[in-house]
Image (cartoon, rainbow, N blue to C red; front, side, top):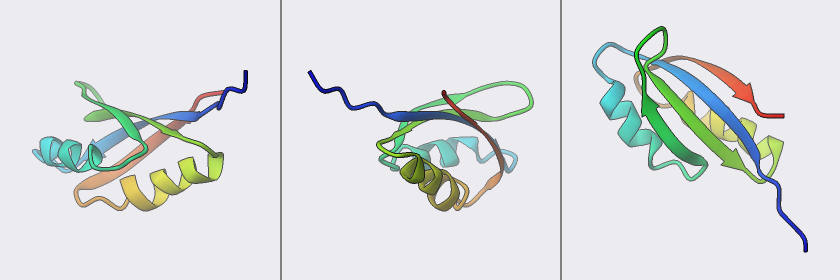
Length: 80
């Protein structure tokens, strides 16, 4: 049986004050985003993303997530 292994990453996001709900809604429209959690602490959102290749994963982070309005900064942890 052939299994497709997905590349997975967790992205911790800082948003502009009060915009975490709007950013969360925008994140849900990105295909690679599988889960979005609002959290208390240093970061505002934790997002689990998946993609077929590492390049697609990096593209989703750089060109989709970081490009969203009101995203101030991100920290990405790629699962190994």
